[in-house]
Length: 71
Image (cartoon, rainbow, N blue to C red):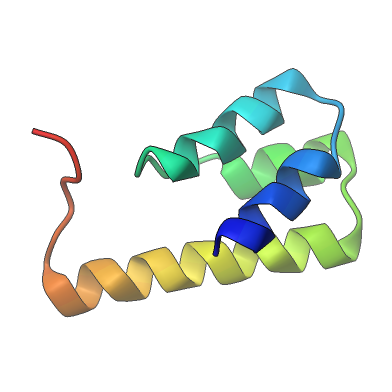
């Protein structure tokens, strides 16, 4: 997941999208990460990586019931 997240960060010059992607390292998934990526025009490959990251995070939450990463 770290590699995919870094791919997203490196693939954009949009600071807002980079900030959202860096948030993944802190355990924060922005609701509008994918729409923002589409808005700024990332490639289909990067769009699919974001979809994969989101799906993996959602699966983790579903399996563990852990929706809070920071106390």
